Length: 412
Image (cartoon, rainbow, N blue to C red; front, side, top):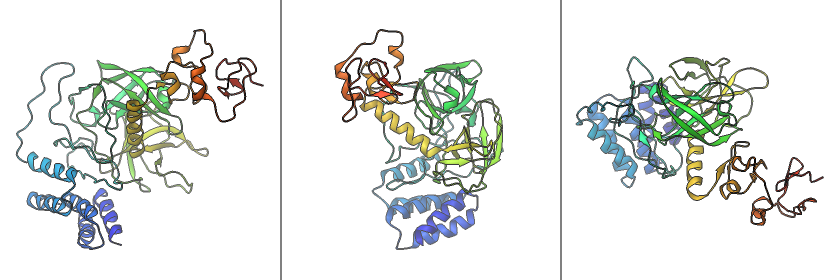
């Protein structure tokens, strides 16, 4: 029951019921059944239920004392203490893409085993989508660390969520929205927006744009990831909840500031927790906008997926999006691969200069319009166990849609 109190307390804090959250969290942290790490999480969230600075500081200190070996908690507490004495940041120097001042606060994904959520101070500003400035948070222990080529940090232009939302131009289905789903120089948008394009234009604001390269798409999630040479100053505060509760009010913020409002739509269908059924049936563009809950936490992205019985769009949860980003960046570090625009995967065969994607059998973009010939070294990438030889080229590269992956001739 103690762990249920912890979960219920976090949910109450997310719902704005700070008194109820504090009551449940106090029950959780005082229980001997709760382990040290979970107790530290409880104290971190208790700090978010009060506006009293001294009480908040005491809760943070109790979090450190509960789990002193957790370097992540200690770093966050040190950042909180330092923020109380920091002078206001200097204005950014003139220029089209200046260096950013102190970044807004970031919140990690839903807590998992071995991780610690970093709660965000409740915001009371008139604009509910304005991130609260705070020192940058360290990476979570369960986050894959990926070294990317240096990316210039985008300076905030408006001080709102619009600094994180972009326009994606050049796809086959019209202009769509996208956003920085993490602190990496990666834009998340809908697969529907990019289609089979390999490069698109990313517009940060009118007159400020850059070329983006599609590095991975997921048709099953209607998700596309685009690599650019610019990164946000921090990550948007994200919901720590693994799913969006029924009837939660949702707001999709598209490029240009258009806001689409609705609710999470309860459904009797059994579906994965990363799907967010919504009441949205119209969007101002081709999709890909970030979704926020009433507490201004990023909960996911609106896609163009609809149910079979209604024209309501589905969202995909931020935890899945960030997991996909971490996986792709890790794979790019360890595996030489090339993007296949047909199936959206990172093809090892394409990365080695071979002609066909081993995932879907399509001709790789670099091999379009050239003479293709048998490459014996490529066969291990294509050949399944006991594959039949092609009657035309005698390869055991396998087949896709009845055609040989090496020569393209019908195998039957």
